[in-house]
Length: 110
Image (cartoon, rainbow, N blue to C red; front, side):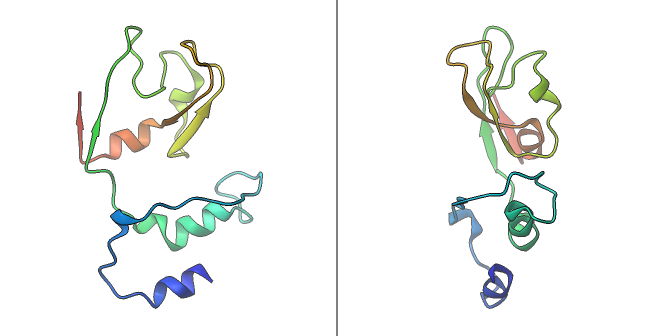
């Protein structure tokens, strides 16, 4: 349905004005055939522009976003956004952009 609806839109849709939220998702890998995310990615997300600029800070331990030195989340390569439940800095539960997203920005500024 999404793909059919999108195909009827005129070229030049300003996707930068869109915010997409999932009301539900199946507990499967994001690249699984049953994943709602995968269906949306293939029909929509892969066509979205990347971030123009990401402004970053750095913590005293060297972390940026909620990506902490030595944490397993540093190896995440499939997700754009990830949760962390064991942050070494309070609060322990956080949500963060992943390195692939940060590194894909047109410009990253400290």
